[in-house]
Amino acid sequence: GAVVSQHPSWVICKSGTSVKIECRSLDFQATTMFWYRQFPKQSLMLMATSNEGSKATYEQGVEKDKFLINHASLTLSTLTVTSAHPEDSSFYICSASRIFYEQYFGPGTRLTVT
Amino acid sequence: AQKVTQAQTEISVVEKEDVTLDCVYETRDTTYYLFWYKQPPSGELVFLIRRNSFDEQNEISGRYSWNFQKSTSSFNFTITASQVVDSAVYFCALSLGYSGGGADGLTFGKGTHLIIQP
Image (cartoon, rainbow over all chains, first blue to last red):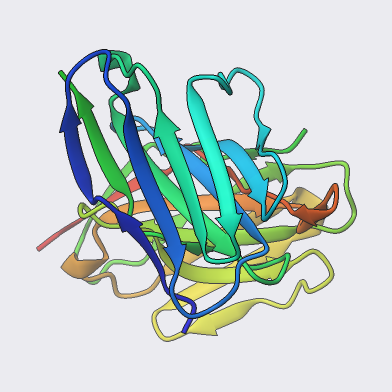
């Protein structure tokens, strides 16, 4: 149990376009979902926290107008990278929480902006 | 703010050797949770362990063991009789658990790249 999926697993897009990444909790309802970003050979950095039906809370330094997060249901959160640029190329990982001390991670989405 | 320090950027050992990965954390909160994750080249995070701040018992799971010491704010991870399949990046992380009406995100250390040579 406690499986989290992400789609797509990898995506290539052109500079200036937008791309949407989905995060789904497959067998449980997630009251909170998180989005992390990981640059090559670096650590994971929390980007934002979203609770179902509420606006996402963004970490300092993360542009909320660039990284749009929607947590429309207890099983789905989406991250949209708007007007993507090469510096947005990264590994994006979501996690979902059903109990406050647990987090279940998705397999990640590798974004390449050309 | 929370902080997790993994001072060892890379460790290389020969198979069957024991290896310890260090993790030191900082937080002013008395309730918190500590985690270890393994990240193989595929990128997917593999959960290894979670400990809460009130449980200082050491834990052993097969070849893996963890030493949690609040006095030194450390949560070290030891692999006994290492194997090539243990090669990966290992992350230590900290969460307050509950924050501001919902679950709290994880603060990760920079990770330790463990290389097990055959």
